[in-house]
Image (tube, rainbow, N blue to C red; front, side):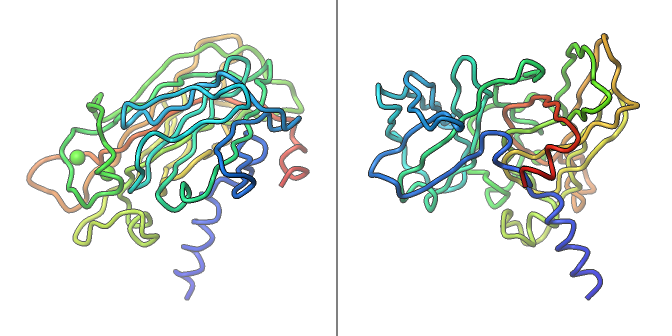
Length: 267
Ligand SMILES: [Ca+2]
Ligand SMILES: [Ca+2]
């Protein structure tokens, strides 16, 4: 019982808590078309880039912010929406979520936000079971067992916290991902991908999903200096003959700063 409770709590804590803050305003069934709008004003956004990077598919929204998905979605896949002046947005969609029109609200960039990377990456070794989470969606080659990037950080006000945001991640095959039905691998699971900030581990990702936010400990931040983010793939804990990294895909990595009270107000 205690174990179950711990699992539920951990799961809740790992879930994206504040979709609205990051532009993740998702509504369904408002019309018979998909649309991209400004999350504050609701105005349609024209000429936004909408893509399914794993499928090599992309389009632009029309004058009413509308778009058609040009690919059939069976398994969960990452859809991205990008528009100059707005935060890069991504959403994991599947056949279920695309059976009705999707309205996506994207949010203007805050001057303090730091966009680290808008591309999609496959981390791992290109060796994975067809039952592993989202295996059918993997189209791009692995960059290896980890992703790392340096970026400049200016200053963090005393009343602000900095968050690392991972827009979308698919393919994680942890025990928790299996228990939640995200991975269909019956006989094995992997350790969780680890996130390092300036060489210190700050989080483990146990579940696939969108808009995962990790608070960056203030003492690890180097102000007015170069900082480094590294994401290491987990390992298959049931393969002892050789190292089998958990193949995952992720996209949209950025840093958001928020005043300390904002979190509780917007939940
Ligand atoms: Ca692998
Ligand atoms: Ca995997």
